[in-house]
Image 1 (cartoon, rainbow, N blue to C red):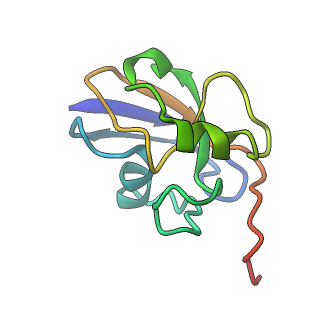
Image 2: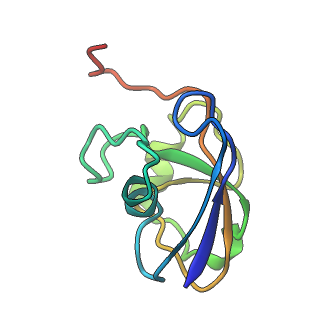
Length: 111
């Protein structure tokens, strides 16, 4: 099992979170299954940037992003060199420290 540490996020996870997940699961699915309601406006189809996360630890353990993800990441708010779309990044055997950016760019959000 791989440990994911989620840094505190004012709205989604005020106290942060720590949980274990099986390798191979997307970071987005891991967050959602453990009560961290990260946005995923495109239903995890790699068509938006609402599930953008920053890996503070463990970035190099992930498989490289593909061209489609890289193109979308260029549009993400708060992009950093260790940013990924959580719907595309799959957990490996290395523990991760995940930061969810304060803002997302969601053109379809209704509330």
